[in-house]
Length: 584
Figure 1 (cartoon, helix red, strand yellow):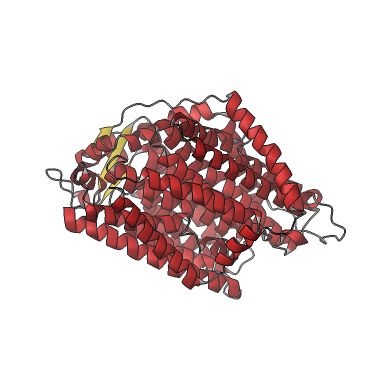
Figure 2 (cartoon, helix red, strand yellow):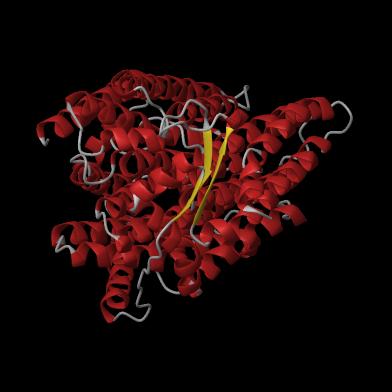
C-alpha cells in the first residue's frame, strides 16, 4: 500500500473500538457473552490496521491524516491530524494488544455476569481503549484533551462498576474529583497556548515556540504537566490511584495500571518533546526531581501495604517515577530506556494485577496477612506472579533488566551519581515489597485451608501465559526490540523539528538512531544481584519489625480524603509552574 493509503486508515483503530462500544449494550440483549466476543473482534481489527502501518512507521516514516482532508496551508493547520510516528504507534499497538488480552481474560473470569452488566462493562472497556489509542495517534493538543476526557468518563464507570460495594463508589468519586481538576488544568493550559499562538497542532505549536518561549508559555506548560501528571499518578498528584485500583475488578485494575496511567506519561512526552522541545524550557530537571520522589515514595508505600492490590497500585506510582527519570536524561539511551520501560510496565503490571484479581476472586481475601499456602493450590498464578515480580525487579533474563539498565547507564553517562543511587534504593525497596507479598500470599505455610478453589478457565490461562511470555521475550531479545521499535520511537522524540515538518507536510521521514545495550555489563549484573540480596534482607527484616515512624507519617498523609488529595494536586501544579517560571 502507498503511504497515502496507509495514512487514510489511521482513524480506524479508534473507530473500531468505539463502534464495538456502541454495539455492546445492544448485543447484550441477544447473548450475555456476545458483547465481549464482538469487542475482541473490534480490537482485533484495530490491531490488524496498526500492524499494517507498523513496517512503514518503524522504518522511519511518519504517516499523517487530516480529518475531512483539511490540510495545512502555509504551515497553518485548521483540521485535526492523526499522525502515526514510531512512539505513538508503539503505544497504540500496546494498548490494543494488551487490551484484547485483558478482554479475553474478562470473558473467562466475569462471563457469569448478567447480560446487561457484561454489555456495559464491554462498552466502557472499549471506550477507554479507544481513548488510549486516539491519544497515542493524535497530533492535536485539544484532541488529546478530548481523548483524556473520554478515558476519564470510562474510568469513572469502570471504577464504580460494582455499585453494591461502598468502596467502589468512594473510589469513583475520588477519581472524578482529581481527574476533573486535571482536566481543568489541561484545558486552561491548551487555551493559553491557543490564545498566544493561534494553534493547537503539535507541529505548528512547536514552530511557534521554537526559540520564543515566554512566561505565559511556561505557565501553560506547568498546567499541562500538572494535569497529565495526575493521570500518570506521579507524586504529589497520585492520591486517587490506590483507591481506584483497589476497588475495580481485576482486569480493570490491570487496564488502569498497565495502560491508563501510561496515558499521562505519553501526554507529557508529547508536550515536552514534540511541542516545546526538551531544550526550550527548564523541564528536564523538574522531571528528574519528581521522578525520584515518586520512585522512592511509591516503593516505600508499597512495602508498607497489607492489601495486595494496594501494594501493586503504589508500585505503579514508583514505576511512573522511573519513567520520568529516564525521560529527564534527554539522551537516546535514557529515553530509549523510558520507552522500553513504558511497554514493560504495561506488560508486567497487567500480569501482576491479573494474578491479584485471580487470588481475590477465588479466595475472597484481599489482605496478605490472611493469605498463605497458595503456591500449592494455584501454581499457574504463582508462576505468573513470580515472573511479573522478577520483571519489575530488573533481574535478567526478564524485561525490566533491559529498561532499567538503559536508564541507569544514561544516569551514569551524565554523572548523575546521586540519582543513580536513589534509583537503586527504590529498586531495592520495590523488590522487597514484591518479595514480601510473594512470600505472604503464596509460599508462607498456612494451617487452615482455603477450601475448594475454582480452576482457571482457558481464557484466563491464555491471558496469563501471553503476558508472562512477553515479559520473557522482551528480556531475552532486547537487541531486536531496541533496533526495530525503540530506536525509531526515540528518534522521533529527539528530532521534534523533523516530526513537526512531517506533520505539516502530510508525510516525512525520521533519521536513523542506534541505542547500545550491553546485556553482560558487569556493573549492571552486579547491581541487579546486589539489589536482590539487599532486598531479601529488607523484606525479611520488615516482616519482623513494627512499622517505622516515617512510614506511619506517610500513611497518615494518605488518609483517603478527596479534599486532601485535591489539595496535594493543586499545590503540586502551582509548584511546577513556579519552578518552571523561576528556572527560566
